[in-house]
Length: 202
Image 1 (cartoon, rainbow, N blue to C red):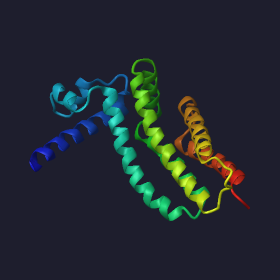
Image 2: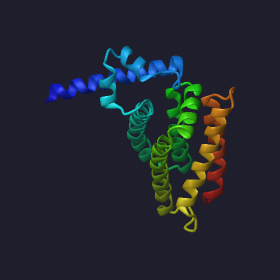
Image 3: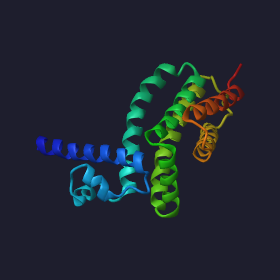
Image 4: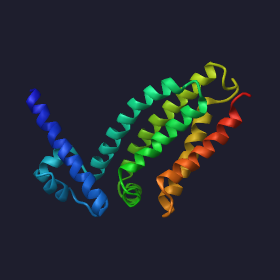
């Protein structure tokens, strides 16, 4: 049984590696499941046994990366919760970091396809974002319980505000050709500071 699971994981890893290389080289839209299967030395049907579609495959890659980040984030946020700005900066920077998985053009193609042809993928992405908002809400709540935030601040509204600013910056990144991930992080960091200065007690 253990050997069988190991073989399954090996196939999944081969599919992941092949998909990442092809998405990065040819773009998400131009890459086919057949190409991914060929590069992974697997039958097309085998790939479909693991993933129902190309969008499902990319989403699975994102979810796995997100889970890895969540584990690291829990350790860092626990150490950094003495500083609200550091905690919020870390969470938003980690979110932005997920966009380093693929070139900008791949993300543009994926979002375009998801919005126009596969709306279910957008719902799946929203569920991932919901996880981010929940974690942000919990972190902000910890600071409020400690008295670092005013009791009359709505934690849910504050988390949604930070998320809205984050998404606005991400859209700028996706639509502005010259904008780099580092520029995106810098822009978001500056805006997080403005938000945090406005809500923390002197």
